[in-house]
Length: 472
Image (cartoon, rainbow, N blue to C red; front, side, top):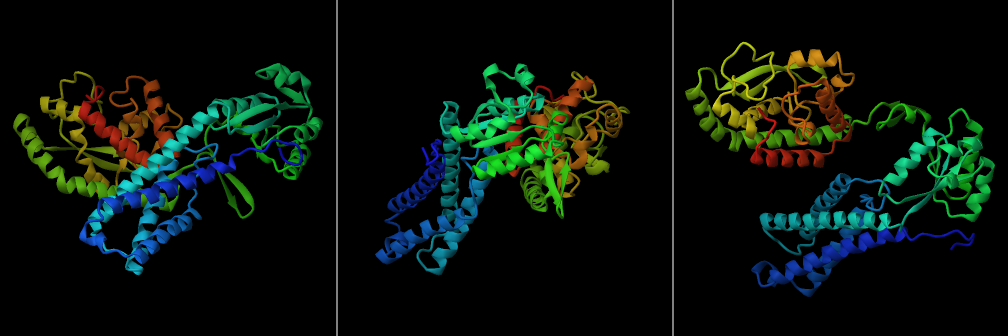
């Protein structure tokens, strides 16, 4: 308890546990590595002074980097993707700083390949430790520990929705109850005893109970009441959150920006609107497509190109106009998997399609027919990962009957995508199936991370090895 009698949590200790675990892991890694290779010519000549400097640099570098890269593992809302991204970025910068420091002080000189492999191993251990800690923390919170006490102001539909979101999560919230001047709204609450009183009772309540956060869901028109709540929260060191009334109508992520001092709300958050993210994605596209076209594509072309030419008349490649970013048209390349036919640009492939050749069926099943699209990636018409591009006829048709269909074209189309690896590949027999695909494409656009792209590529390769049932 503190001086006011309120319960004091120990959540601040979690960050210390994380830092201690990080330092323990890093130091043990370097010590074990040294012991394993201490007989090598490179390490056998290191003196006590150099070992001391190395120890100081190893730990000082950690504290320097951790001062501006926060892992946020203990945050109530954080995803594993973000944890992996921040932990990987930390180790990458840490490796650069250690390498530079060791070079400046002339402590050790190790060939670049084993030095790089060592940091890859350290990075994998570091990321794995952070993921494990997050999983254990969530499990701990599910059991009722390390939670935040929350009260909700407003017992209407908006307040109940906020309650459902808080209790459904594993992020450590415990909702104490609701305050509302309308006592009849008790009937809307999940439990009658969740009603804690009128808004005039809030100050007395927080003086006698531990409250960490207040979520206000009353209409913005009640300006004076909201202002009084903000003053009350700041006076009592309680975090205040305003749940906007329009949440009832728009259930999606928003992006809040400012033009001078004027707040501007965007309908969706798009990570790829940031130049740094586009730079990372494009850099990866060039590297990955370049590697595939240089080392894999030539062999695939020789093998399957020869088979295609010998089994059916026509070209090796099939090109078709598709809809790209912002509705721009481009020619999408594929290995030809069908016999030449007049419906190639209008009719979608269906199960048991007689136009598909035997080798074409195999290529479709294993996604080999998509490999030429790495040429499109290198030409900046496509990305390795993104919403799959549709035929022009499909774009015209579905854009008129599905409201958010064209939103998927705010990013470059991809060779593979989130919809494809989560069950939305192949023929779309109904509008509902296309709506589900569009929903997942828009989700990808709003939730993009570099590690999500890596995950999709991994799942694509895994599905290709197993063989896609819906690919025909």
